[in-house]
Image (cartoon, rainbow, N blue to C red; front, side, top):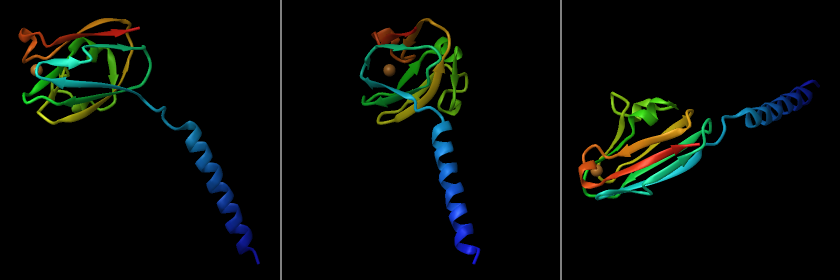
Length: 131
Ligand SMILES: [Cu+2]
């Protein structure tokens, strides 16, 4: 009767495969949340560690459309889901009520501009530091 033996072996192989995939799975991103309201970012200053994988979570709680505009910062980072960015990769467009995630890994320490392209004249600006 070889069958129970075969099933037992398959189960053992399956269990080992599960353990291996869990051990070698992609790292869990560090979540950073920014809420956009009329007319500011909360918080307005973000700090990232270079070469760490982040989930930048954006929510627009305002009544206006806002943008998370940070072209130089985005250009120096690896973006796993570039489709969430505008075509020129300079910003994330946020309609009222939008919630979006940018999965990114900053690489270059420095300070970077953050602004809302529509409302920077109104003081909707901030900053990003990569350490
Ligand atoms: Cu705005």
